[in-house]
Image 1: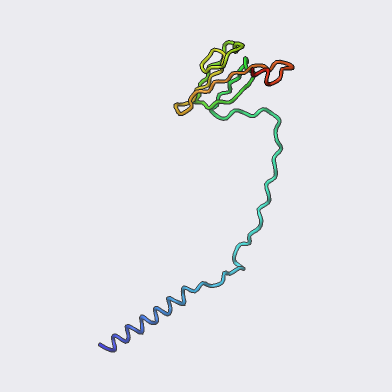
Image 2: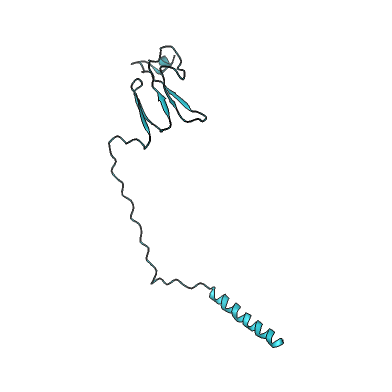
Length: 129
């Protein structure tokens, strides 16, 4: 029984020694490794002066009354203004003089836009008073 025990220990010792030496990393073979080369820097493409195309599914809204255009997501709706902003009034949402935009339900689903021409030679203080 003792000789069997010694033989088992000797075999285990050889296996352990072989396993430990097998885990030592070897140096990489650089001759067979692919060489890395730097990637060329991207070149800037020339900018186009053309009007950009709308995003897929977007709707372009143009306010003839207020003089602006914008691109709306496809799930937004709009109601254009039908009258001018009356003088001496504070703008209110949902009025006939606002362009109204409604998005999907959320914290701020409605946006109203109104404009007024700045009178020639008027100061900002005079305009706002």
